[in-house]
Structure formats: C-alpha cells, structure tokens
Amino acid sequence: VAQSADAADAATVFVFNRTFDASRQDVWNAFTQPEHLKHWWGVPGNRIEIVHHDLKPGGLFHYCTRFPDGRTMWARFIFREIVAPERLVWLNGFSDERGGLTPNPWLPNFPLETLNTVTLAEQDGRTLLTITVAPYSASDEEARIFAGGIAGMKMGFGASFKLLADYLARRS
Amino acid sequence: MPDRLTSTFAALADPTRRAILARLALGETSVTELAKPFEMSMPAVSKHLKVLERAGLIARSREAQSRPCRLAPGPLQDAANWIEEYRRFWEASLDRLEDYLSKMKAATKAEKTKGPRANRSKTKSKE
Image (cartoon, rainbow over all chains, first blue to last red; front, top):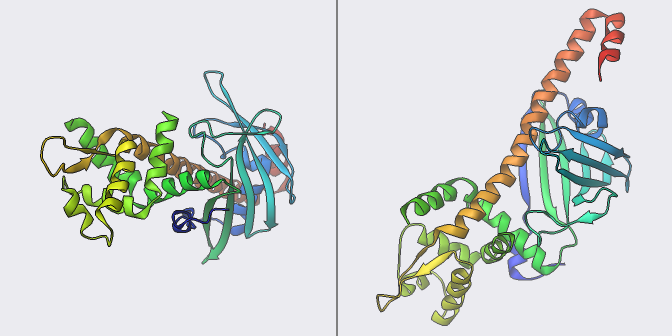
C-alpha cells in the first residue's frame, strides 16, 4: 500500500523477543486458549473478560478490559494463520463492544489494524518467542505515522532519547 | 495531544530528518554544518528543517545570522513517552506470560506428584 521511500524504510516492523523456560506447547497453549489468555493478556494490572474466542482462520477473539474506575476498553483479534505450536498470525485492533473496529484511542491516525505474528522456536528445552507488529492495509498517511513510531523506537527514542528529552525539559 | 504526536511521528518517518535529530542530540549547530553530511541542496535541507520545526521537534535561534538549530523538548518528550509506553506494554505482557508459564509448570508438576484424584479436585476449585 505504501510505496514512498519513507515507507520502504519502514518495511521494518516492531519486533519483540523473549525466551521462556517452558515447552513450546505450553507457550502455544498460553497464547491460544482463552482459559490461559485471561490470566495474562491485556493491559497490565487488569483482568480481561473474554466474550468470544474462536481459534480458526477468520475467527474472532473479542475481549474487554474493565478498569477500576469503571471505564472499559474493547479490543479484538481476527485470526489469520494458525500453525500449532509454532506460528500464530492475527489482525489486532481496538473495537467497540459489538466487535466493530475503532481507532487507537491514543493515536487516531495510527493504522486501525496491525498484523501481529508470533513465532515460537524450541531451543534446548526453552522457547524463543518473537512477536512482530506491522501496519495492515494502512493508508499512506497511516503507514508513515507507524513508520515514524518504529523509527523512533529504533533510534532509541524509547530509552536514551527519553533521558535526553527529560533533561532538555528540565533545563528549559 | 494525539494530533501533535501524529505530526511528530510523521516527521520522524524520514531518515534524513532522523539523522538531523541525531546530529542535534549532540548539540546546537548551524544549518550549513547540518547540511554537510547530506548530499543535498541547502533548500532541501531547509525544507526538512521546516517540517521538524512545525512538528515542534527543533527550534531555531532568531538572534544569530546563521540561525542555529537545536532540539526542542516538548513533542520529543511526548513521542518518547508514547514509544516507551508501547514498548513497555509489550514487555509487561511478556513478563506476565513468563510468570504465568512458570505457574503452569508448577501446577503440572504438582498434578504429577499428587496423582489424578488430587488433580480433579484442584480443577474444580478453579474459578
């Protein structure tokens, strides 16, 4: 969708890695079964309420986070690829309570949906998990914004640039 | 606030502009100095500087003739905070998965040692 040089530079995606001291099957189960997901997925410090979970290509996972102050936040997955126990691909987005897509509450021009891919690899009885997050069918504008976020993260905006920015803010 | 973040991220999407910011992180400098590493005309560099200035990422001195550029703190800080939050969200999710997996492992071990009877009552007592 995005063809500009900027977007090519952003062909890159957000990537997160973690090695777990657990079997690949256990990590897969934790990621794909609602009775496990409800114990760890969602906004830190809050349990999620799962209203729908249908693990099949095109299937919907629809859930709600209820915050202590009464606010609710709905979100959804649409599963794309399910290759147990090694690869899960889904479209990730915020939604309303009926499951319709809604914009990112913090960044209205962020792509409505991201294509998230989890791969699990076994390594000496441990499991290496890799998550990638890429914009999905984003407009050029949305792709550019996403690219900026990724680029910012790669620049070390998240850590070292934050220190610099805080320092500058204190000084001014 | 979200609109400002949007223009910050849009400004960051360009590699030349990121390089300019990285250079400015080292300290205030003139436009001529900034243009040196890029094979680019001065007007082209000025265009990038205008985008960065409009996004509030840099400020340019009005005093000296050379109008030196420096990083501006506000939007840079908002963008850094947002990116840090996004990263933290994923890291925290993976932390919780890690905790949960070790609980799963402990539960499986307990089941094995207790035998099937204990296992059944344990499942019932779960929510």
